[in-house]
Image (cartoon, rainbow, N blue to C red):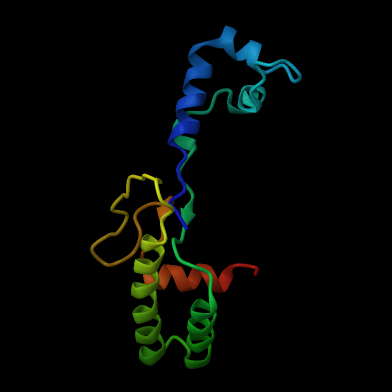
Length: 141
């Protein structure tokens, strides 16, 4: 698991916007200069780059332990016992996810957590145990 990064895509879009002649060369399929992003540029016309937010994601391993923890949470409900059990699992799962970073992969970790434990804004990693279980339970898996 690793952090989803979109900064390079935003920089490419900015470059193509600033160099329209180059963008026209790169939008033609079949040419050696073809770049699919250049062909999509018309979809971004009039939109600001700020619309391209980093998506939310959870940096955890999808393994038997995750399945057991979710199952336990669903059985115990969102009472204090179920919540404490999930929070304990979640803090350990975040650490395991960070340790599973591929060799040579570099990333910039953002502090995406508010004082109350919830995640800031719409994008970036989900670090809050409550937001994580809510996202997992609403996902169509």
